[in-house]
Amino acid sequence: MKLVGCLLVLAVLHPFLFAQNSSASSEERTLLMLENAWNFAQVHHDAKSLKSLLDEKFVYTDNDGTVMDKAAFLADIQDPDYKASQVTNEGVKVNLYPNAAVVTGIYHAKGSNKGKIFDHRGRFTDMWIFQNGEWQCIASHTSLLQK
Image (cartoon, rainbow, N blue to C red; front, side):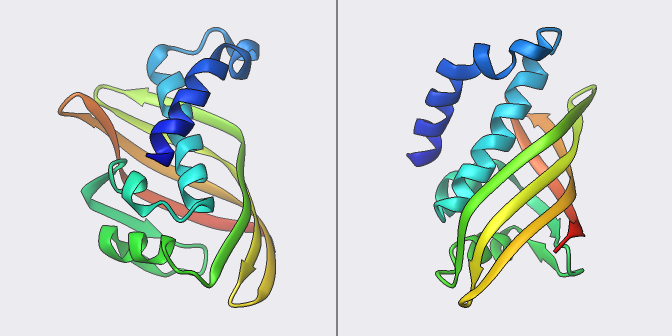
């Protein structure tokens, strides 16, 4: 439900959020909103909403080299020891292909994990496919730029 609320807010704000890039296609705008909804779900430990964005064969490669499948990634999102106060993206670029997209950008995450403060900036690459009338992420990879 939180994700739905976030998407509604983004839908209302979307003309303002994308004003500087009015040439973006509706698919690009949708993917940018989904990326932002992903960040919102991470901050709020909302694995249920995030689950709907991920394909069943989803694979995640974390900045430390850890590889997780969908179940492990969603369990990690729910870890109460991980407390993100901010997860934002910048410089996001969407490359569209027939029924697929590669989204790249820089993420900035702040918070604490197991009581230890973190402030990470890194690059991400997300691979999305359009199937059954919706976009789903099939792979995500992050690498740190700054720790």
